[in-house]
Every structure is written in C-alpha cells, then in structure tokens.
Amino acid sequence: RLYGKPADDAEAESMLASLSGTTHRVVSGVALCVDGHCVSRISTSAVTMRETTRAERAAYIASGEPMGKAGGYAIQGRGAIFIARLDGSYSSVMGLPLYETAALLDEAGFDLLGALS
Image 1 (spheres, helix red, strand yellow):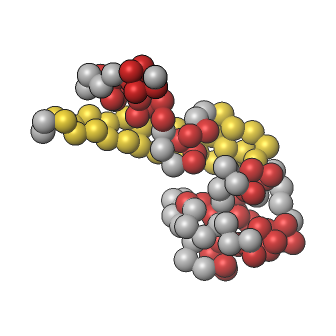
Image 2 (image 1 turned 60 degrees about the horizontal axis):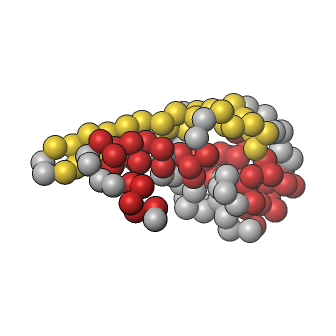
C-alpha cells in the first residue's frame, strides 16, 4: 500500500491505525541533473511503529502535525513517540535522503567539504 499525505483527519486516522504495531518501508529518492545528464539514488528504510491507541492517534491528529506528511506522521516531530525502531536513514524518512544527495553532488564535482567550512 502506498501512503501519501492524508487529505483529512479521517484519512490520517486510517493511515496511523494501519501502521500501528507494524514495520513499514519508506522509500525516498533524489535526482540531480547537470548539463543535461541526470542521475538518481533511492534510499529504503524500515520503520517500526509501536502499537498506538485510538486516543493517542486522536491527540496526535488534533495537533495538526499529520497533515502534509506522507503516512500521516512526522518522525522529526511529535510522531517520533510512536517509532520503536528505525533501520535505515533518518533524513530519508524525513523526506530528503541526505547521504544519497551528498553522494550525487560529490559525483558531479561539487566541493562538499568546502561548502561545510
């Protein structure tokens, strides 16, 4: 099942309830095009969500945080309290796979270390 961003509270509840007590995969990608040459990378992570109660999900949904978040949760926000385990890339689950992005930029000749200083 693919999880987009919930359209409303009912869809957020449905998503969160279906993820409760399960491990799901989060797949994020990034592409870089330079001088007409495009390359891309994919990052796949496994996220285990603990069992959640209807009351916990309702309180979380009332916070407004699930809106605009794929799967109806934000690992970098209040939704982190539901995450029991993450195998993979934290930044990828947030939405931008930074390791893969840096690798693409490095391969394209961008000076990443110079940008850090």
